[in-house]
Image (cartoon, protein in one colour):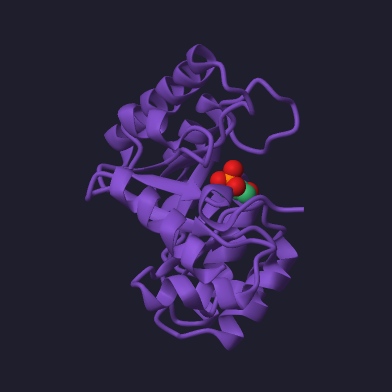
Length: 219
Ligand SMILES: *Cc1c(COP(=O)(O)O)cnc(C)c1O
């Protein structure tokens, strides 16, 4: 069991250029699986539910970098603010204000990515290009001293159609370029999951979020 987990993890690692950050998406998976990968050197793990993230943080080594990758409700920010190392899923100014407030209480500056809606599917969260740019240009954002905008995140359509995926990844890269005109430090591009991370990297992804290819399929 743990041998095949390590095997799948090493296979993903081998395909990644050195500069690309691998977020091992451990949602729904047991703590033992995280420990197994921790013991072979992985430090960055991603979760999409606050309760599960807090529970895993509490019982696993403290030098793990926990990334929140799923939709985040404002009222739950306080639970992860003490420890979260990157929030991928900022999709409103309201949420950003809340992260800023809770980060301040914890004497921290929390790194954030703005999530953009790039997929064709209706259900995915995120800003459109103009909303994101308006947010970055807003006066209010400059007053939020306890957050740092590090870049963008997007989820492509759930499809194996390479043309559709390529179009969506290109769109996010284009948004990223526009954003780095306003925020030169905001260079991270979180895109690519199990089914599409190699294509995402070809398009310029700097962070990939890979779950099932490493841990096996979820129920
Ligand atoms: C679950 C999830 C992933 C990983 O999905 P896989 O297809 O299992 O690699 C990546 N990003 C987000 C936002 C997720 O919720």
